[in-house]
Image 1 (cartoon, rainbow, N blue to C red):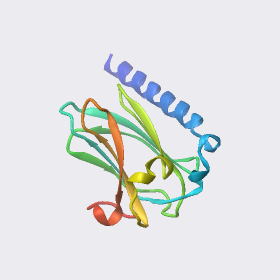
Image 2 (image 1 turned 90 degrees about the horizontal axis):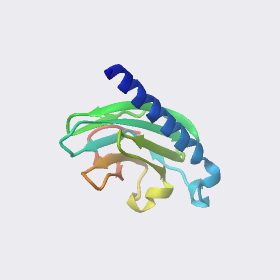
Image 3 (image 1 turned 30 degrees about the horizontal axis):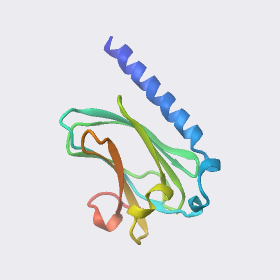
Amino acid sequence: MTNLNKSRREMIAVGVLSTMSGCLDGSLLSSESEDSVSLGGIFVRDHREEIDTYQIQLERDSEIVYQGELTIDSAYEFIESTWSSEPATYELIWATDEEMGSVSIPTDVREEMDEGDCFHPEILHRGHYGPVVDMHLTEDVDEGAC
């Protein structure tokens, strides 16, 4: 039964991520999305007591460059950057058993971004308000590089 549930969850998450990524192509983005940024690794923090599993997908210029599953059982998990450090536009998509969301980088998080060369997104879950995405400069974090 556990394997069946996990397979079902994985299938749902893959379906949700695939559906969302299809809806978020360049035709729906504003002209501001022409701006591009260098993106380093991704932080995923969950301050709730219960352990949660996240399905994460990152698209770089509409191409999937990361897709994986993380179980957050400590303060945070870090996804090391394996994608190019050249500036681009990104779509960060995540899903848990209860929630899903996405953010266009830099379009949706422009207010979170100071002047800088490289940014690290952080999916942060503090509780009943659900996950939010913060942006951090490379020089402000202890892990990862561009």
